Length: 251
Image (cartoon, rainbow, N blue to C red; front, side):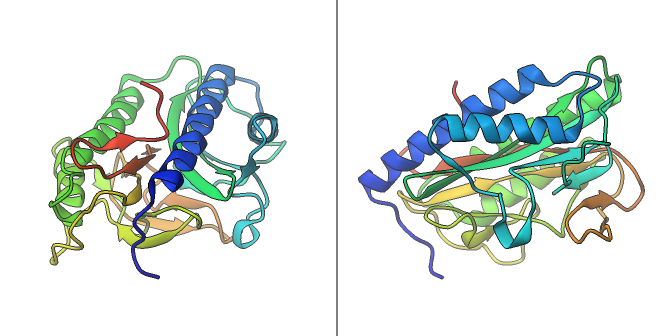
């Protein structure tokens, strides 16, 4: 699949998808509290997404059984919601969600603290979020994809954190995952040259410890190999003639 350049009509549909996803995350973030199950979050997320007339991108995607990926503490991504998994004060929880609006996807992730969390956990969340913003400083037409990747890695590693290598961001549009892959770490090659109309899901996944991860027996949930905390922050981004436009964030 070649990297697609979106038309103005397609961009407008993706803007709408992104706005709905941003609102979904805002509502989920406000709802998180100790005592909720991860299944409660999934059910609420699906209700919100369908309430906007959209389809959850993740539901049954390659067999994934839920609408929201809910990953707790040392779970990096793709945690499967479970009514027996109860959030407790001090936990970190990463929510990864996608919506389909009139055939176009948006994809975004946020990591939240549950109640009061440690200063170390809060710092990890903030650095992960900021590493995304350091990366998109280079998400401009004429730059190369690797400029984004290099900036994300440099910022996160300056705090001694591990940048996950086994999972990467991606292009997005009529498919949830399109070309190109968007690593969060520097490559030997420059990667593609960025052009206006490209849409990318840029998603730093940062571990407090080493970058190594393992898959659990459910074939979905990815955890840190050293059991350290992990944070995830993602937005769908449009390359323009000027500054990048974040489609899945209401500023």
